[in-house]
Amino acid sequence: MVSRGFSVLAAFGGGALAAFSILESAANDYDLATEQGIAGVLVTPQWAGTVAAVTAVVALTVLMHVRSRMATATAVVAGAIAIGLPDVVDVATRPANTLNAVGAGLLLAGTAYPAVERRARVIALATGVLTATMFFGMAGMWRAPAGRWAVSLWGEFHVPATLPLPVLTMAVIVLGTVALTTHPVETEAPTRSVATGVVLPVVFLVLYATLGSTASGTASWTVAVVLAVAATFWAAWRLPQSTRQVLLGLAFAAVTVNQVHYYGGAEWWLLGGLPLIAGLVVGWRYPRVSAPVGMAMLVVITASGLLPLSLYDLVTLPAYALVLPGALGLCASSILPTAHLDPPLVLTAAMLPLSMTFFAVSAPQEVTELVWSGGHSTSQSTFVITATSPHPIGIVVATVTAAAAALAVVRLRSREPGVGDEVIPESALP
Image (cartoon, rainbow, N blue to C red; front, side):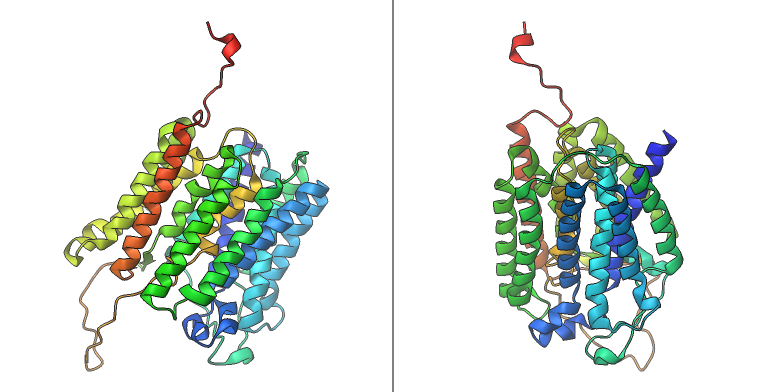
């Protein structure tokens, strides 16, 4: 039991560290870089997420083919070296972003292979990626943002590693131990799942660069979102019926449109981890009803961004900080089948918020009103948690997207046995 619990926690930690590293690597001036053309996209969160997602799927496919414990541990070490290299060698912001994404992808693959055909570990890995992605703002309470400038100083400005070297060293020890002590499973990666994991993030990247970047208008952004959602649904329907709901069920995390920021004194908001744990337990125990309930909760939470300011701080902020973790746990633990797990597809689905950043990064923002304050602060707010909400059209589009994904999952589950249900042959029935 101790060994199993250790492996599950290692899978969660590996996924969380990789996702945090991807988000932390984004240049501070990627908005300005995007305005300078396609080359500027190479320092955006969209580029980092795409490179990491493709690298993770390709590397995991190779590991599933060679079935080597040493190769898995090597992937973990190589990923950690790539992430930590800027602390040893001067690396400029532009290449550092790509190098870090490759390292995070290798780290994810090395974490994912020991989880093959082990449902608890796969759920922990997906939950770690999604948790770090959706609550990245909480890290602001304990870290000072690094100066990652890609345009202002070009290649002359060198950046630190996204994760401290002691943390990377501990990750290598823990994840390497799990890799070396886990017996490889003799299973191949499904071809369609691998193709989906490579092609879909590239499609998102092209749509971002041409239609949906931070420099695009509302109409262009909306078109990009519609095309991205259509591509996701098309890819899901090309997959076997037993696994397509995994892609749609975990895609819900990509529509979280509010960036929640935590400040000093907000430590008690860490209690949001309790709903997450409760959601995971309930979703594991009652999978048939948990996924629809969790996705319905997401639709309501996303739509709450349309509330007026008088209710925003009272409803929307607690919803994102405390209720959303419960919805995340319900979906993550109930959407995966009990047999025939598809690790490449799970990685692709869990990384959708990182590989499709239209809602979290480039959603159209309200126009900021600037006032003359004589150098003094004009705000007397004492809130320790705030959220940056996009333009209402962005919230409407996200809500419709979440509702479409929820309805698709409900329809799929109504046409097949519930996850975790025992299927009794007709010959055994009275």
